[in-house]
Image (cartoon, rainbow, N blue to C red):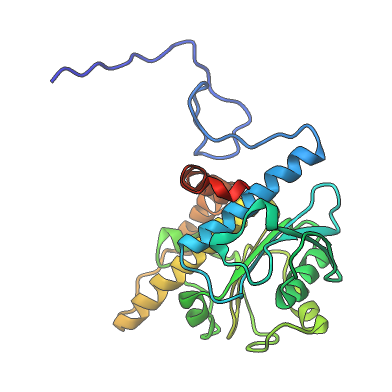
Length: 281
């Protein structure tokens, strides 16, 4: 077998402004780039499309549970408003045309569908209390709900779990109570702001991002998987050997950032774009 090896181009130089070790040092290679926008309308369309993709990704993961579950992203022009999935529409049926835009009081200012009351109470309070948070995700998942019932944080049992090391928070406030009262949403929202992962005792998982809806969505998917692994290890009765604190921090810094969450979502976006083009309707 003859294999032709392309010789390196000596004219290539190291890419500048690298913010991650995963960005190629060579210029000219195919690699996802952070988007830039010419106006608010262009930015808004991008956010709505990625919000829909996040919902479709949740459907593929089996995160649906009746009407429960809500994903939100802050509007780029009107930060006091946020886009979210419509009430009683399955994640797999969410599309750009049925998204709704709501304010912090829960009033729908654009769109035809009602808003999820629990989603409004919790997400709106978090968005209002923390202007730097641009996106949030929550769903009633099997493994996340089970592990959250322990009231314990995830341990760094794998490199993937280390991405959440010292970047997760267990919240016991309002544990087990459905967040349909504004006051309950405020008490929980006050505890957000510094971590990307929230384990709400007797409720489930939430993720928040200061970067993008893609990042919030991927870290939710990753968090659920880590909860599954934690439960599987616990079921063996064997005490796992943990990643050391030093190595866990190193892993978190290199593979646990908002940017890495965004990057992980890019193949999900491309797969959905090819297989579910109706999401853009």
